[in-house]
Length: 102
Image (cartoon, rainbow, N blue to C red; front, side, top):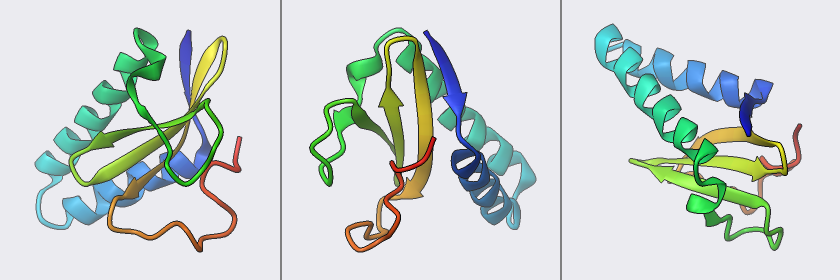
């Protein structure tokens, strides 16, 4: 099992890092590192995240990390990280849906 990050997910991480980095580069790097560590745990237990409530697809899951939703697709040989989005954002009206990538 391997972990792959989509371009949108990488862009999300960069945006989070840049936002936190306005106050502290140190804490920005540390926070992003902790997100990556949380995702790496999926290698051992891909179903540890809950199903994404906005979809019926069983293989679309998310980890909740502080105020962020880390959405991913669990496949037979990989975990595809789709997006890292602030939990306060309403994605019900967002098109395309964050899980329609990759």
